[in-house]
Image (cartoon, rainbow over all chains, first blue to last red; front, side, top):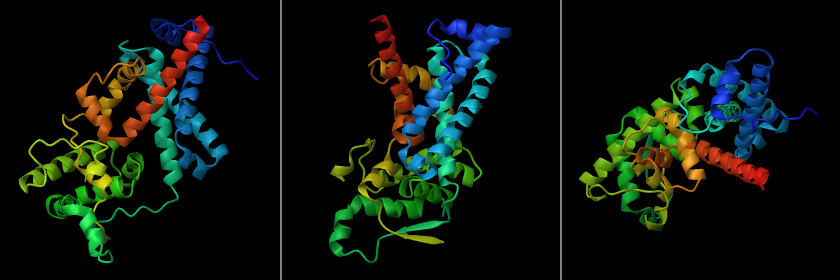
Length: 217
Length: 84
């Protein structure tokens, strides 16, 4: 078994200098960096038990290595953009985390058919009056707002991300768009719904909605 | 058209109505994720309101932040152990 390269002696500027050096110094720095990225990729994979169970241990191990390799390419390509606001190792870790999360999500969801067609949000006709009462005015107003205020694309994105809980990277791949573009759509549709509900009196002006408020609804 | 016969659940209502202003993109979140995670790992409060709001509204970025903070806390623990 090969011992992991030691990075304890490297300060942030040392990392940059060593990665730009030639010969054995650069080789050692590259090996140390790859070791760090594998560690980060492994940590991200451990936080994704559902995907790991779907993919199996060997596939996850392969993807972790591939994600670390891809992250290493990204780190080296963007070395000039490291500004030293935080530690170099923290800056490098994030490339591995994002790459691994995306790779595992996409691999785990690849065999699944995603229904991201146009959707219409209607009350459940099989639910009794008690259930409707429990759903509350706000939920009905939200459903109405979705039907009347959002574009077909916004309705699709809201349904896929919030109801179906499809990971944003997976949805971006299926819709041939980007994570950033989908998040912008989500941001805009949330704002539009809030304004609509404020106009209809279901939300007070400037009311903050925060995670953890479910029990109050 | 697919018809969804349901009103949103309470957790979906919250997710749909989250106030994620001021706007911050996932790309900008990524740029600041390392320094933000370091402040969280060192026990400081949220240093940036746009980052805080983005992380409330973006499950993917929030998940990556949690892993990063976990890694940094492990590093801090290793550093303390090495000095110990």
